[in-house]
Length: 289
Image (cartoon, rainbow, N blue to C red):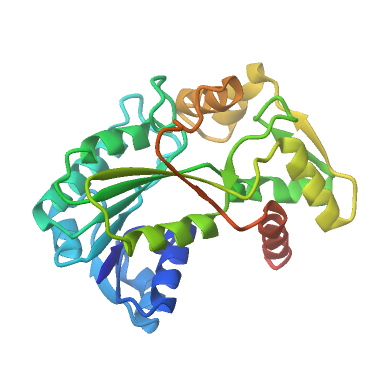
């Protein structure tokens, strides 16, 4: 039995589908039983647990051949990352108590960075789980291609998208959620000892100009990309309702300045899904809403 957290999201859902397609038993861990019903219909076992409830998580992880951990995203964290700490403490306690056969944890490019930023939460998770007795793998994924969902409306309506990533021509590691789910499923079914780090990116690195060009091909129109000036970030993020935009701003600084990158001393994996495939799906979804 493979116990999957985050199964109602893109990565967890893709992971579960790969396991089910391979004939593997899956335990869907959800906070809301209603959201778990589609997975019940797929033949999954259901476990109810909030990610900050160590007792419920222990029960959900117990007798599992493998557990997949997806830390709930906190995009506007408190300065001390207190929300993430509550999740991490519960996850660590539950894993130590349940003792599944192995653990695969979704981490991120730049988890090892010393500068505090939005991704520090996943670095904290890696540190907390580093002492696990059972085999465990941290799957460090690149920038998600699906982040371009925020650009679909602008690309369709005005033919101009904004980018916080600069320089606009510089390519960085990006990957699709589908590839992350597929690789996580493959890792869960492997045998290994100790701690592993697997760095995952897509078929090729991608620049903001590549995203604009791909939108242009899909929409059959010219799509331009323009850099958002750094001095306007705080005002923009505050207008979106953020209370503490500094971690998000420092994350973007990290990509732009180069200190958020792969560490380079672990295993590497390549995705198969191309950027244009992801963007086409996002455009089609937008058209159907």
